[in-house]
Length: 349
Figure 1 (cartoon, helix red, strand yellow):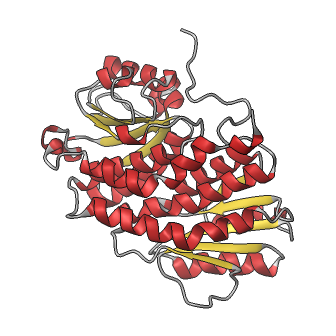
Figure 2 (cartoon, helix red, strand yellow; figure 1 turned 90 degrees about the horizontal axis):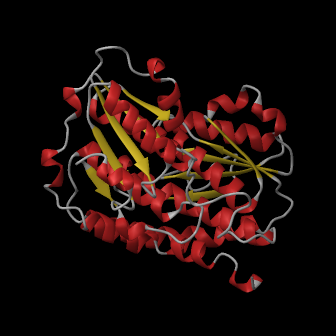
């Protein structure tokens, strides 16, 4: 393959996100959730997925519990399939929310079938391809068809399915949400992508740590995975303050520590970054608002969005996707075709 064409699909899919977000949310009729299961009718809500969509489930479970008050947990599809008694007790009425970009991931399909055969509860599917098998496993589907991808690593599909979870969790679409998401994304791209590309080209940086707490931990997990998939770089993810409890032993002058800073605990999370800078690391914070010249930070990406956190969360992703994409190119790799990976994991029956 011509190296100049490396990553053409991934690049287009990352950069198209603001437009795709607008298309996706505008494709959902505001009334479509009226017939969907209501979480207050269940003892618990389980969110399942594989790989990226398991990390998406971690974000969704924390957001859902905060908004609904319902006990919400994220489980890898394979764990629910193989160890159901560790997640669902006899007589427990459970709502299962399964995410899959392709709607054809074997473990998730089998986990849904097993759940329906052995447990009491309903299933909601969130996907980008309603026509594939998972779309027929339930009548309750939220699909982001416009976010389908040619590349293997999930970018716009992940962010668009995040919006689908936000839609279900909140039960409504804010007025002008499509327009507002597009505007916020386009402004963020203008202001943050040059910085992400600049950092990617600094080959003195060899270790990337992504820190996030609460729902942002799931997004830190996902951005860590993007760095591994697309650029074959050393990357790990941790809760912000947990990083002090051992992992910081890996910090040196070749390290970039990236903190996803939320609306709560920001002072403590920024202090972690300051500690890591004092130990020789480079530091980057992604936050809605931080001081103009925060101590302990080399770089800042400000989201600067009035959107509620559940909708604003989507903005944390694209700068780090762009970082991974450009580091992949620097490493001489084709971001469209990560090493050893296929777009869908399909297992033999």
